[in-house]
Length: 434
Ligand SMILES: NC(=O)c1ccc[n+]([C@@H]2O[C@H](COP(=O)([O-])OP(=O)(O)OC[C@H]3O[C@@H](n4cnc5c(N)ncnc54)[C@H](O)[C@@H]3O)[C@@H](O)[C@H]2O)c1
Ligand SMILES: *[C@@H]1O[C@H](CO)[C@@H](O)[C@H](O)[C@H]1NC(C)=O
Figure 1 (tube, rainbow, N blue to C red):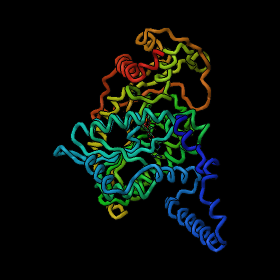
Figure 2 (cartoon, helix red, strand yellow; figure 1 turned 180 degrees about the vertical axis):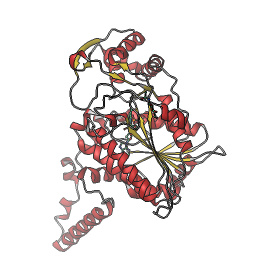
Figure 3 (tube, rainbow, N blue to C red; figure 1 turned 135 degrees about the horizontal axis):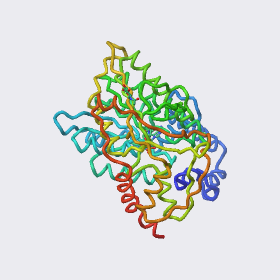
Figure 4 (spheres, rainbow, N blue to C red; figure 1 turned 90 degrees about the vertical axis):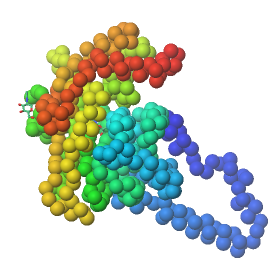
């Protein structure tokens, strides 16, 4: 994380280079040459400025900064680049689909991309490799996908020109939209990143999809957090979702409403998946099961939240392989979009599914399982659940996903954590021993 920031912070004109610069010698020449020289430098700067400015309509400084960064770091445009994309998008099974996976270097994106590729679908990834959490983990997932034949384009979902270009190169039949700013508490630190990725970014993806010919079907990640402060359990798709407890939840809820709009106006086929606390190998370091593992191994105390009156905090932990099956089933049952040329031709499919495990586990039980698997006793420090985004419990009713997708989770928390811990120790093995 700090490494990337460090590179970005190096000033572009370090002072020590000034002495050797040609400017000193130029001073000896007559003033006309000097004037011509500076005019060229000035014109050059103006040219570079306009040429490099992103064409994106985004007005927030954070957004334009990001897309400029993506222009700088990605080497798109060359024929070699297009060739890699086409190879990655190649469909190998006769009933295969062609999928653009956004957030492909993320936890869920990596697993979904690998699963699609394995069964013979064409897959192209897109990810901006941001440093919300350690980007070296994202790079390691990228290397993993590269070995299975999936190429990840490095860029931002807000980069309209890039998205259009990808649709020019490949006729995607489906988009699996997983790129987002995740995490609940980080919203207080960086609210803009949620608006940038989860709202502006989603709209950009949908705009490009609606203009594509043919329009792809879209499956995207919403979240169980849309149930917010609901107390009726289990959470069913028809329950109210108008009392979010975090900005993250609010942006996911907004996403569901935006999806409704694009389905209604443009005939885009849209399926939203409300994931319930996904965990597993290659997971996200900002999630409790992950940093609990790290801190238990380090002998650091871990915070265990408790609701008012010693109320239990529980989560419906869902193993990544079960989530992947749900994602693939959603893609396979998605009907075609009905619009063309940016216009709706008829009603299109609009769905929302819970993808959970239907068995909430208290966070203290999660810690006990980790202690047994790691063979280390945790230093627990019980704290009151802060009111900054986390809800007391989640519990999915998955009967709708079961009926429509054949979704049936099969991994319990102990089995899933065992696989996570095995991966964790092999990935971080050396560091843990230090
Ligand atoms: N993991 C969970 O428990 C969980 C629960 C509910 C919902 N979700 C949702 O599922 C999706 C995947 O989650 P995850 O756990 O894999 O998270 P993740 O952070 O590991 O993956 C998201 C990826 O998207 C990329 N990204 C973010 N903003 C981007 C942008 N503007 N342009 C391009 N790439 C961008 C990130 O670099 C990251 O690699 C997200 O939409 C998330 O909100 C996850
Ligand atoms: C679960 O959701 C279905 C609708 O998909 C509903 O018919 C059922 O009553 C719900 N079950 C519970 C226990 O709430």
